Amino acid sequence: MSIRPPNPPENEDHVLKGMPRLRYRRAEDSLQDARTSLRRWWWEFLRLSKDYWLVCQTSKGRPRAATEDELLGRVHRDFGDIYSCSFDEWWLDRGYRLFSEVEPFPKVKEVSKRPNERERQAPGDDKIWVEIPLKLSKRTIQKQLGKLLEQHAGERLARRTELTTAEFRINTAQFGLHTLKKVHELHALHRELIDKPKWLAQQQPKKVKSAARADLFRLGTLLRISPSNESLKGEPDEIRARQNRMRVSVSRILKRSEQLIANVEQGIFPSYQPVSVATPRFTARQLAQHKELEAQWWELNLISELSAEKLAAVSGVRYIEPERTRQNNLTVDRRERRVIYRDA
Image (tube, rainbow, N blue to C red; front, top):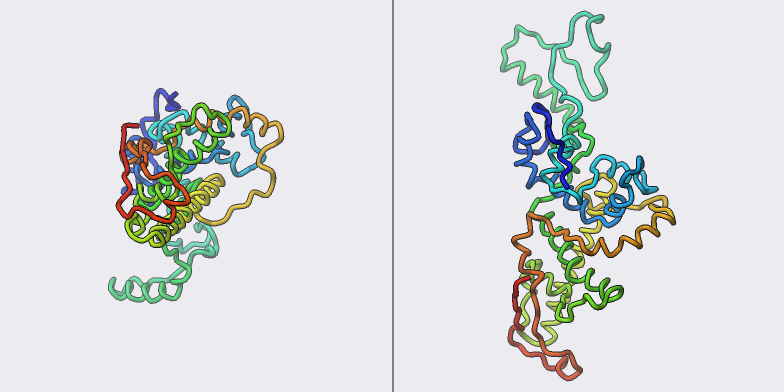
């Protein structure tokens, strides 16, 4: 179901910091750049939040978000139901507004000589007033201004993205898009191949495919998390050591994905900072509703469209390896174990 309005505004001039272009005339103009930007991954990681999905499902038709967490409720109020639409539809409907600058950027301007014509009678805390002798050469003025600015270097922002008045601000920490994509892929794949089968085994065992097997080592190998630890050749101790190192690397990235999700639930992205929710997020009645929705959550496919082609065959991976017994644990075949890809 689309949430895009039938007749989007013809002229929605907006400014987006950190995008290839600073100013865009319409939402359709910024969409192309937004599809692969940090703002896209903000949307993608929010979709990974089970709590956010539950809020979306239990808040339909209600004036207030079904949660006691005010920050999560605020995110829901502004981002809306991101599961019933594509990113393109969401961006054109409301996404571009959430990340647009609310106030114009400050500019260097002349202060009136007459006090009664000035906006204020003294410079603000983040400004200085200077007197420029106009008879000096342009070069001399620029040189002297440069020296004056050096005295206030500590008050200037290190990055342009920090100077923003958008409702939702991109965290200024340096997170590469490639890294965020890999973290998202691993989380979504772990959910599909490990978390979901575990839940099905407990709740709906008839739907579990006995041939479906996956663990952290195999996920790390599929996504090339640590190529130096992929080989299954060598002495048993060497193999086990490489497998353990791969599992540690995968576990570390999964931990980061949980931190990213926890922060994005609070309207912060990207961030690995620990998050603590001060009050219970849901009431007893809401928790009872959540239990009824559990099966629907696991039916969702949360793999990003940006990774769909890459991960298309992953859900069909099957491993053939000897049955684990006490005897063959002591003698490991040094040849590469086979990995079979079949259509998902």
